Image 1 (cartoon, rainbow, N blue to C red):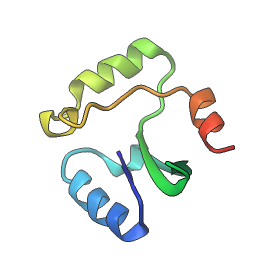
Image 2: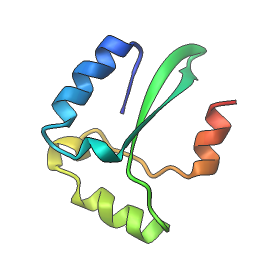
Image 3: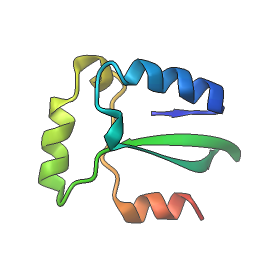
Image 4: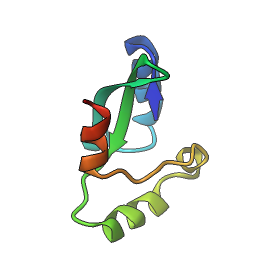
Length: 80
C-alpha cells in the first residue's frame, strides 16, 4: 500500500486501522516514476514462512490489493 501525499496516506491509514492493528505498520519514503511516494509495510517477521502465513491471514479487502512480501534489503535498496 502506498500514497503520493500525507493527506492521502492518513485517509488510507484510517480505513486500514479498522482492519488491522496499526502498531505493526511502517511507512517509508521512496520514489515511484521518479516522484515522491510513501510506502506502507505491515509487520516484521523472523522468516519468509511467518510472513507468508500473515499475508494469508489478511482480510480479503486487503488481499484484493495483492500485497507483496518485502525483505529489509529490498526496502533499503528503494530508499537510496
